[in-house]
Length: 90
Picture 1: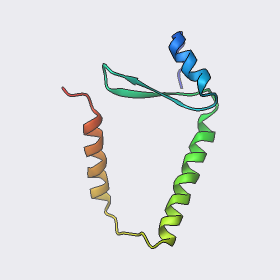
Picture 2: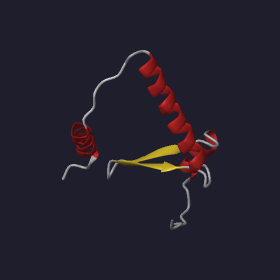
Picture 3: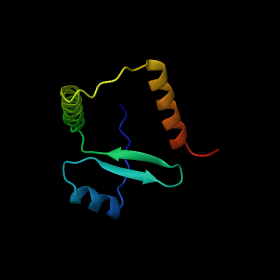
């Protein structure tokens, strides 16, 4: 992974300091993209936390009988639809 060095603005630094140890989402209004800034080394910990939380939600849904058949083609189509909505209008 390439490291790019640039200076944070005072506003960005203040947001990061207000949320120590947490990832911070920064939206670029021009491109309509959202970027994630976090302290180096924090990603594996956050990724594991996210996966564990989603697994717990899934197991709880199964226990409640909230299961349904799924079709990979429809899941891919839904993902493409969501990505198309997020893309800047051209």
